[in-house]
Length: 544
Image (cartoon, rainbow, N blue to C red; front, side, top):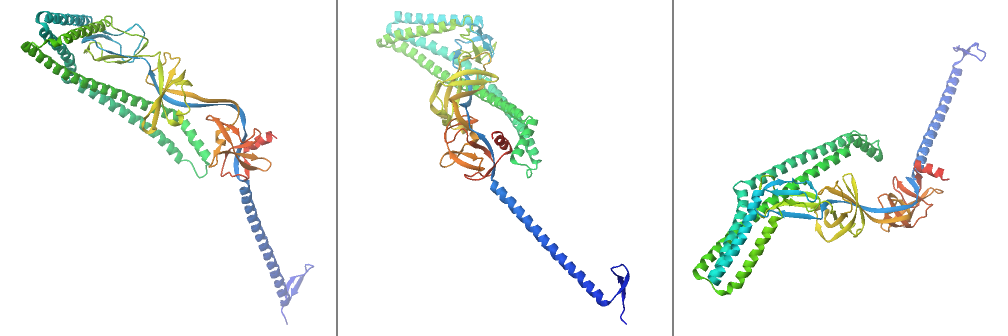
């Protein structure tokens, strides 16, 4: 008898199922599982295909959208083209004074002092002055008497002898003049001390330059260290630059670098100035030695002539020459006396100005013929510029110039343009251009840098666009315009005119109502789709 199992019938009653029935039931369940598996597989494939399609469509849409562009319209306005150059403020009127005799200095205004017209710059000791004047007057009279005596008592030979003797005194005076100068350098070791002081100052200034340079490097390292902390993979370039800029502002980077650079420039100026002083001392010493050697040689020659005339008495051909020499000697002696008399009340300032160089201080002895004072005017000043060939063609004499020095502003004009260029190191060939200063005042400081802004061109009520909107290729200059109906950009070649730092004149090529591309991301090509930036979209909506 076949075994039966109990099951559940449709009415919920218990029933017995045969083995055959159980087999059929299992087959039906298996078929249902297969059908569901197939259905789910098909659905998965469809979802995958839909995802791939959406991704491809997204990429295609992005490709069709092209670059993001910033848009604007051309404007009407005025353009001024300027060149800004830096130069050195210099005086046009410089007076150089030398000591008329060897005298002690009683008063001396220090270098860099401002002196008004009529005020005393330097004054010599009264006793030394009186002695020097008497010496010149006595020597003049002695020479005159010697000449007259020789002419009266000895005839032509006597005149020659007298002249030779006058020459002996003359050259002996020159030896006496130059010997103290040479001795002051050699015996008192003044030259070595001065040069050592110069070298010490240069060494000190170089140490300062190294210190300031190290501080600038430290600032740069701060910026570099901060940059290394930024996640450059997730930041756009403009965001990266903005963060760097903000950090520089936070640490007062630009002000510190500008201040340190100014200090370095000041140190370099000091090195240059003391170097020039050293060169001046070297020249003074060398010149004094040369003139002393010449004076000694002339003295020996004059002495030999005296002995020769005493022995041979000469001849009558030298009569006219001796008379001319006596006349010339008298004139030179009188000129020396007149020059010395100008210092009776001291060296008086001939105009308002600055003592650019004072070689001696109170108590020093100034040797005859040595430089004592350089005095410069502050009422007549100019700025000397070094101009390269790219800017030179834009300049001409008479152009208006705005001059800025420290916090002050002055007006001026281009006065001269040198016709010969000189080499200026890495700057290449430079032409010297002088700019007059029309309204100098008490805030003028000679030797400092002055910034000159020169107006080279000016146009009014012209069509203009931002300079970054103009591009250039092998054909010429062009602008990208934007068609808002097609969302495409078009390349248009233009003719440009005057330009400034911000705007450039468009003479021909576009109209006022055309949308132009002032900036863009990616690659921009003629006839390609482009997407306006958010701010440009706002502008387009407002101009509907």
